[in-house]
Length: 55
Image (cartoon, rainbow, N blue to C red):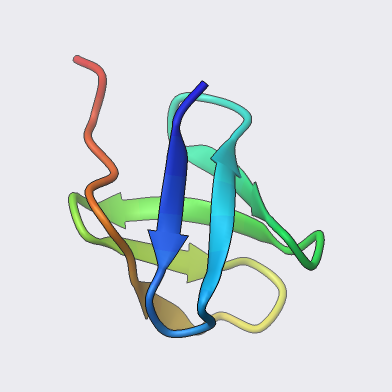
């Protein structure tokens, strides 16, 4: 299980799939790059700790 830190919100994202995760507030996040994720509810881009592609 990988845990990613969301610098914008100050909380953690738990990976639930290859490019999908859920933060501590229950918001679904999608990986946009090695250090970017997007909150699917708000559409906001967040700066995150390393979220590597598993390929």
